[in-house]
Amino acid sequence: MSNEVLGIIALLSIIIWIAVSKEAVKPTKEIQWPKMLTLLSAGTASAFVITLSLFQSQPF
Image (cartoon, rainbow, N blue to C red; front, side, top):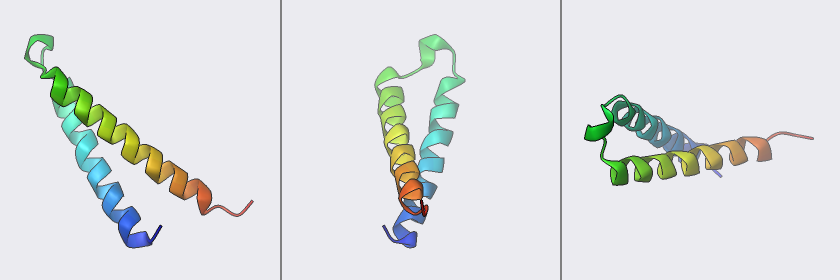
């Protein structure tokens, strides 16, 4: 994966996790659960892609 694409994914991941943290600090009754689950899924997927890419670039 090119460095540009990985950089864009990393920036999007940061934005997603900031949105997750903003949603998580709300009181339980105010949390929008479908939004929270979507953000958590997207954040987890982006973190997985970044981690996989970093491990593939390591010489073993």
